[in-house]
Image (tube, rainbow, N blue to C red; front, side, top):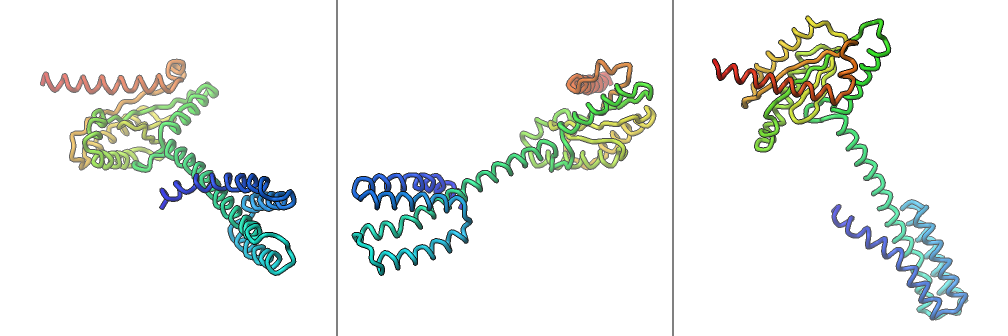
Length: 286
């Protein structure tokens, strides 16, 4: 149905433009000036009516005006050829219908475009599969935390950013898409259950979760990270997930180094890769 509408919409728009142009050209050649001017006026009125009035009013207006026109042209004293009378009678409803139909489609396309923008904006800020906010919001909060640390130096505020990374998530996603989504949902739920309400959890895509913990003591964070790793290890996920949890605390001392989100995130990614390699080498030696 939508394909048919999309096909007929440009055709209707083209007809709404060509119909009056052809008719005005024909009237200027084969009709007198009075008739030609009258046809032009009727077409202009039809275009304005089709654009301005809604469907219901257009329908009633067409019925009323057509009835009056029929009575005036065929029952009144109007010396015109019958063919001209018929043309004058039908041009208004035809052009009104064409213009009204085209305008409704243009309005619908405008709303669809706005809706698509809203959906894209929503998906850019929120991932419905894991029910978590995404990178945009994580960066926004992190920058706010950096501004607070800079502004209130006397308070010695700090913030800790924890990366929970599934190392081989993309390879698994390529071959097992639905299982990947299930695993992501389970990981998201596990993080929500193992972290404090004062922390902020985000999904960055590619198997990466970020937890931003403003002003949490180191002892508490160590306990939370251990609890997170334990909760994740106990998940009933039928795949060998290589998960790594690494953290970086941003304070007054290292603020200049990690004030940029990109620098911080690259640092966390390197730490996760290093941790994975170290554990692999330990396993080989063992």
